[in-house]
Length: 172
Image (cartoon, rainbow, N blue to C red; front, side):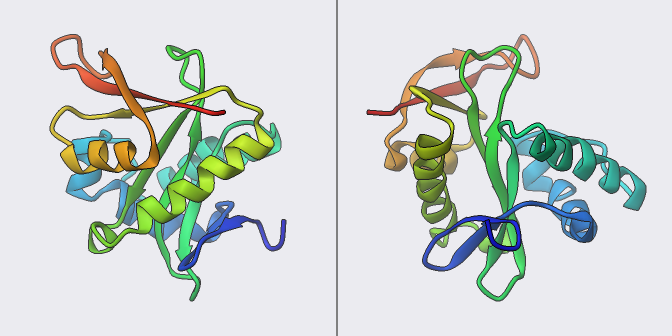
């Protein structure tokens, strides 16, 4: 791993987060689209962003477990996050991703998530990988289908009255 880079695609690098990502995390997690599709993480200031980076990224790297990563353009500009999460209610990890609004719809998520599937297959020895999308998030559902995920049902994650879509990717 060079400079925390775990993999790269044609236009992007996938790297470990660091304390210099505070402003990016604040911006991404407070986008309306992030709050609507993923949830409000209550990261509202520099201190809570530092705590989020420590708990959601750095601690997971130390444990060498499933973790999220920062997605950057080759110029180094952070544009999103993507990676793996081990949810207590799922048997296998799930793939999660979020991008700044101005970088959605340009193929970055497809490009990066495809690289992450290869990475997961090589380093985690998984048989399956899940993904969860909000019912109204048609763009994310379309992306998961392009990546080879199959919708396997619904799951109640945030509330008991609103189901999300559960997808599974089967490694060969």
